Amino acid sequence: MGAPRLSAPARREQIFDVAIEVFGRAGYHGASMNDIAEAAGVTKPVLYQHFESKSDLYRALLDEVGTRILGAIVKATANAIDGKEQTMRGFEAYFRWVADHHHEFMLLFGGSARHEPEFSAQIRRITDDAAAAIAPLIAVDIDSEHRDTVAHAIVGLAEGASRRLVGLGEAFDADEIAREVGILAWAGLRAVHRID
Image (cartoon, rainbow, N blue to C red; front, side):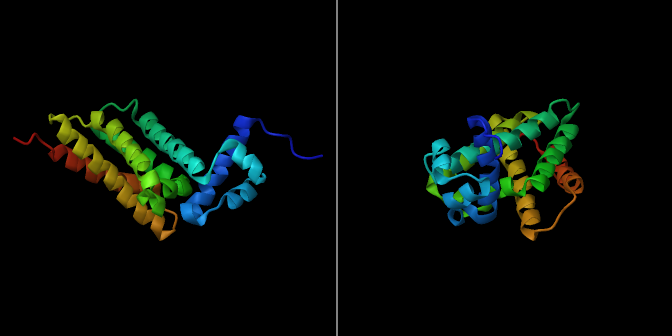
């Protein structure tokens, strides 16, 4: 007797999880729909029932992964009592996510697809969404343009540190890294002031 047949939403979720790993490991250009179908234990026709093309699947994954990381950060910072705690909790959630989800991080930030016109605007939107979520947490008397620039700088700080850590290919202590980067960010935020 074979394994029970999955519902369409459950099958789609299974394909997502497998495809994240395949794309995260091989990159967009290095992965094929055959690779994903084989890893998911489905036929290519079943894969194409859910996604019209490899690029359609990749775009759906980018949105899903962007939603997952942003959700983790928003949830972690929701009940913080002040700016410092928000900063530290945000970095803790982010670096724990990177430590536990290397393939998802690589899908968003590690591959050459980031520079493909087909995906670059979508990845930029995800980065903009992260900065937009961070901007209101910056409790400093500065204009909105300055606040947005600082929020993007914080996103870049986290991404740059993560690229190095993931690139080393070794396990890392997410809480220790979050403390180090969080202290740096908080010190910088405390020094931000209105530019006249």
